[in-house]
Length: 232
Length: 221
Image (cartoon, rainbow over all chains, first blue to last red; front, side, top):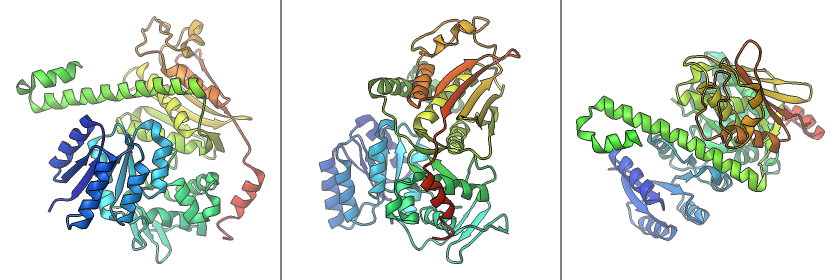
């Protein structure tokens, strides 16, 4: 059974390029050129058994937030936002509202497929409490045991460093916005305090990365947030 | 265009390797066109409203992002990066500063021999953070040191009359971004050769209350 993907894209050229590329990869594609069409498809598919498993949403369409809200009602369908470079603010708003990940145009097909794989693996559950282990780049993390080691050597983290890392582990491979990190690690009153995040991230990198100016584990998404490298 | 029309019109005569090569060329050109378009759009935007989205940013992260981009283009081996180990946070627009540095590094790579290194360094000075991007090209005629930052200025700016390709927007955008941050962007050509572009961004103190709470945070939370 192939995976049902809804592609919401108003640009005809891009829609057909993406559709062809995804069909080649074995996905089952449903396309929508407008928001009302997308909502109709979503409503229809939720009433049947062939539910949507992934949504690709281009921000070129006005009012993407309405559509996102609609999908969030249907619980777990992951949503990947496709945005143009100048839509930075809108993109971050959608991520804060629960979109799973994003891609900035122009992007390569390889990049899109990688994002889709990660989103499908997590099935759109915004923060999965069940993820307690992470392995990647010589670093091994056991959240339940609060144990972190690098190349077999235990790494000591402060409670805040650990909480920050744990939040990223639960969304491994996906972007987590500054606002989400600040609110989940420090509390809702701290969402403006991005400098905390920078300072603690620098400390975490100093402990976990070989070269913290060239991180391979704790990746920066400029202007958006951070992403823990997808685990192995 | 040439590569695309060759793919379109000569497809059946081309073997797989030639297909790949042409596709690669289209990809590279599209990337260049994208960068050029972004430069023009951003320059127009700064011109229209000078609005930048500042936040506390880490210079280390900005440089890290730069490395990641050139790794994607398989050119990271040509970058020699020296980032001072503890850099203060900077109040700036990370996306724009990233775009500025990308342009400087792109130019530095473009105007030096294949495989020559481009040096990128970030250091704290008394009252600013200094980003320097330098290469070992033939240098720039001193008469052009200011002019190259003006939009659409093209000319034989190389000391040996090296022609410059491009639209003359990249450096104009770089300077506009520097100015929007109350910083400066200058070029100098050391006697030993090469050219060195220096971006200086003024330092701004983190709020005092913040520093105290950051030190206490974590351990007592």
